[in-house]
Structures are given as C-alpha cells and as structure tokens.
Length: 451
Ligand code: PHE
Figure 1 (tube, rainbow, N blue to C red):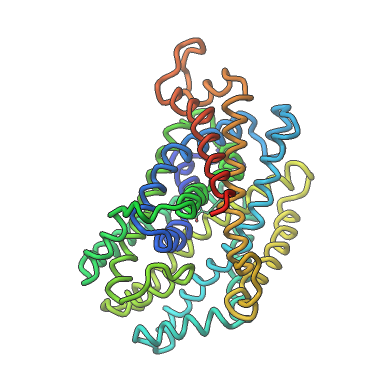
Figure 2: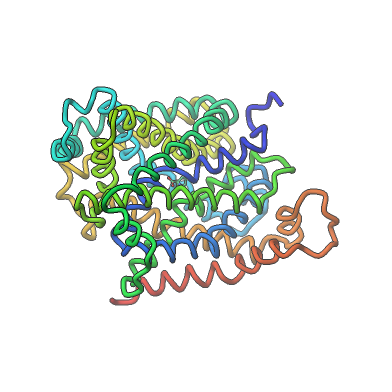
C-alpha cells in the first residue's frame, strides 16, 4: 500500500504502539517513581493498574479510533457524542502539550549524553566526576535549552515526514534493538555487589509503604507508561486496518511495556545499592546511576553511546506519538497542511520546553505547591489529566457507545454479528463499565481527603 496515512503491516502496528508506550516513562520515570514510593509495593500496585484499568482503557481508545478513523476531536464529532465527551479530546490535546513540555527536557538529556559518551565524558572517569558533570549540565540554563531544542527539532522533522514513512519505519528497526541492549545491561547488573539488595527493593513489597501517594503515583505511572487516557492510542488506531486485533494488540503492548519497565528496574536498583545511592533521588536518579554503571564496564563509553542512542530513540517514538495527536487535529479539523501544523506546534513546545528546562538551574527556586515548573507539568499531566481522560473514555465506551459497535470492534474480524462475545471481550467491557470508573474515582477522592 502506498498510502502514507496508514500503518502497513502488523509488525508496524505493534512497533508503533509499543514505540509510543515504551519510552522515558519506562527507563527514566518508572525507576525513580518506584524508588520514591517504596519499590516492590509500588511495582505490585502498578501491575494491578496496568491489568485492571490500563488494558481495558487502551482497548477502549482503540475502538473509538479505529471505528471513527478520525483525530481526537473528529472522533467524538463523528460519534455525535454529547459535549461532555468532547472534553476527552481537549484533555488529550492539553495533555500532549504539558507532557511534551517536560518530556522534551529529559529527551534532551539523552542527546547531551550521546554527545558526552561520544567525546569520552570530557575525560571524567570516576563516579564523582560524572556526578559533578551532570550537576553542571542540569544547572546551566543555556545548555539545557540547547539540547531540549535540538531534540525537538529532530522530533518535528520526523513528524513532518508523515505516519508510515516516519513513524513506522523507525520503530520497526529500533525497538527490537532497545530490547536487546537492555537485556545485556540487566544481566550485567545481576552481577553487581548490590544485586540482592536492589532486587529485594524492587520485588519485595513492603505493605507498610503503601499510602495514597503510592497509589496515585502508581496509577499515574500506569497511564503514562501505556500512553493511555489522552487520545494518542485513539489517533494511532485511526491508522489501523480492520484486520488489526484490538484486544491482543492492547495486551501485547501492556506486556512489553511492563517488561521494559521491570527490566529498567533490574538494571538500575542493583547499581543504586552497589554505589550507595538513595533510591528516592527523583528525576535525576537514572541519569546519575547509568554513567556510574558504565564506568565499571570495559569500553564503558562505547556501551554508554549505544545505550543513550537507544534511549533517545525510545524517547523519540514516544514524543512522535504525543505530537501526532495535536498534528492530526490541526490537519483534520483546521484543514492545515502537515507542514504548517508541524511548525506551529513545534514553536509552542519549544517555548514550553525551554521554560521547563530551566527548572533544574535558574528556575529551581520557583515552586508552585512545592513543585518546580517541570515537576508540576509532570504531576498534573500524569497523575490527574491522564487518569481523568481514562475515566471518561471508560465511561463513554462502557455506557454510551452502542454495544454492538464495541463488541464488533473488540471481536476478531469475521465473527458472526449475533454470536456471544468471547470471554476477553466481556471482561474488557465489565472493566470499562465498573472497575475503571470506580477505581479512578475512589483514588481521586482518597487523594482529596485531608491526610
Ligand atoms: N508512554 C510514554 C513513555 O512511557 C510517554 C507517553 C505518555 C507517550 C503519554 C504518549 C502519551 O515514555
């Protein structure tokens, strides 16, 4: 098919969807969130959220996207949904802006680290020297802005090339490579002196650590990591063909995504304990630990280079999907060319990204609710907007969308229309109607209570 507006192969569908899901959320955000919220307890609750809420809402987004074949706003128009439901689309568009606003900064760090690794980390070999470098880098305003903007320029260049050529081709090659290299590093970590402590931190749940912030954090991380609740998957599903199986694609995405997060944990925590670091170091955790791991390896800079190139690609396939939601909307609803949409949105993100990149240096003292601008963008989008979007998507698909459409989309192609739905379909529908809405609402209410 010469059509540049659809994914052409089954592998392409999986690679692009998993490409969106697997990103800095798995390798950078998961370890630091788990580190701050008690390790094993966080992991356990996180996995429950992925299974009980994540997979059904992913499937729900796929249904709306493929059935309508539209961008987020166009989809609810085509469904003739009441105005309340259109808010899902606007929550999604706003989330794209907020997430790209902080994500592009960390993605910029990956580019800086590619440069550092290629130039031998400026001669720094000890762990202390590498830490000092990270500090100098993140506190310097202009360097931060430079790398953020460089990353964004690459992102919007790929976006301007279109869905199939840009997104599918790149994901097909690079996602499997990321997986392979992560496996190598995990095995290496298992031989570190801190491995027993690190693994027990990650896998042994300490239930006394569970409080509302653990649960809210795990829910936010589940939505964030699956790219769900904001229309990214809806937009991608509008490029799926009728033969794509929605439930198995949701499950495969969730399994691979969770696997990569767990692998990142296995890679990071043994090293954290071996180097005597604190697991709760926050957003800097992974960037402090990774270079330290590389110093212990023969040909460390070469490994570092390979790793950061792959991390960069993982980030890029996610930012492409984040950008695509808004670009598809500009093109579909405003009638803009792809080029114009790319330039306009690129400039908006460049401004926001530059501002949030200063949160580690010149603007470190600027805090709202005790959070820097960077942390605020992250907290509001992941822990509030995505779960809210997910709640509305679950309610819409579970209660409003005609059941016949839902069943037909979720079932394998070619199924008799009147035949009873398979178990998987019934479970997804049950979760969309009851489990997702009740769980998300309960956690929001719990979070609002005084603690
Ligand atoms: N899931 C991506 C990651 O884990 C981030 C993302 C969130 C992408 C929301 C799209 C939508 O890095």
